[in-house]
Length: 367
Image 1 (tube, helix red, strand yellow):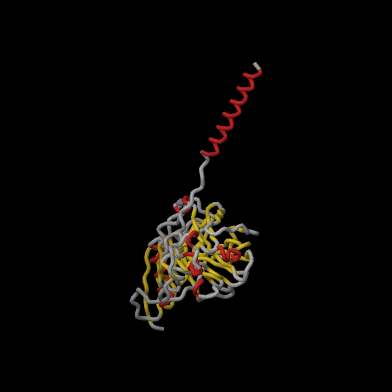
Image 2 (cartoon, one colour; image 1 turned 120 degrees about the horizontal axis):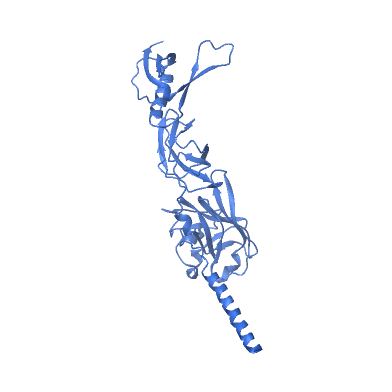
């Protein structure tokens, strides 16, 4: 009877162990894309640019680690990157932002394997804060083998255009060397567009551009990135959650083309950026005025008539605001700075609500 009891216990233990193993094997495994860096034949390609702090000469340029050769093919001297003594860095600037969550490093040929990195950080360049963000740190890595790559994964939910490995120590030798560098995204992050801003449009004004986009219900705020090149959106503005159809960026230069993109902030995390749009601010008038001044007569919906003595530039600014507001862009009110009976006040400003204006007339004259 004791023997039977022992057998039953052993069977029960095995069943429990098998169930535990089944649960582990059934756990969802994180999946990654293939290397998202396109094979390069020089430092520039359609996908982006290879970058490095230095190379000892052109034979060991940065792009050699992105030349499409696998780590087992890195047996020739000129298919690797060799940099100057530490600290040294090597990276890639994507033409479109990526959410990198994995990278691999392969050493160079066996004769110089002691040039391999020993301590480094994997970093991303944040255009908004103008700083390198450390995503992964490795120290005292010495067990390199020819033809064997090392893989590293980490958590990251933000999209950046520039990534690098910043090497602070190597395993010995005069230089630091890398045979191959790959970067991957989590598959789910490449298709995670739940909170991506859509239908972004830009309308030019005088030294300004008005932006509007579809509302993200869960958004706590929005970040606007813009610049004079689609590859360098290095200026930022933060808006409230309510300004998705009502945000004007002013202080721009007329005649200069600007590019814009918007991303939402949900749960304190910046989500995938919208499409990129462009607009060129201009002082060229859409209105055929002959005088340099005018009386702007506005009839309000309650029948009140208001008159303002303005310059033609001020009239054009009012008309631009009115046209934009009619298209659902810009502020819901217009501010007029009164020029008479100011004292004893510092200034007198009247705010006209768009939906309270019934009609208006412009009476031109030369002053």
